[in-house]
Length: 112
Image (cartoon, rainbow, N blue to C red; front, side, top):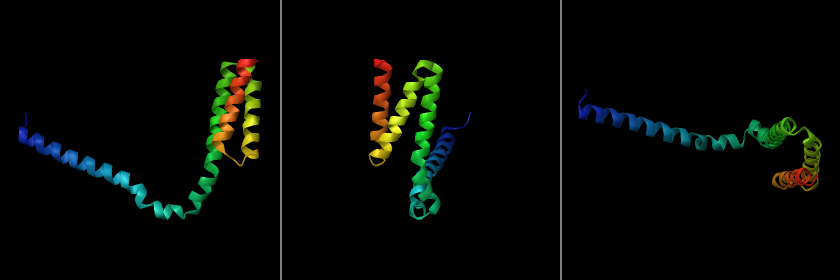
């Protein structure tokens, strides 16, 4: 069995390396932030990512709805249409459109 001083030294080295790497990995995004703000790719992604995220969310939700309750498919499609309409009509406010679309879906499923 290794001595206590040997184990303490090994643990100190491991902790030092781990903390150094962790801090470096956390600081790296801030170091390149200035160059990323002027990047054309980042500007294109910032314009298209919200639409992509909402599309993935809609496809996932619709797939789950159609698989679980086939009779609620029309309600889900109507809620998607309302969400898209609210999003375009009220200045592309994502939280507002998703909230109203969700409320429409919940009302349709529970009332009808």
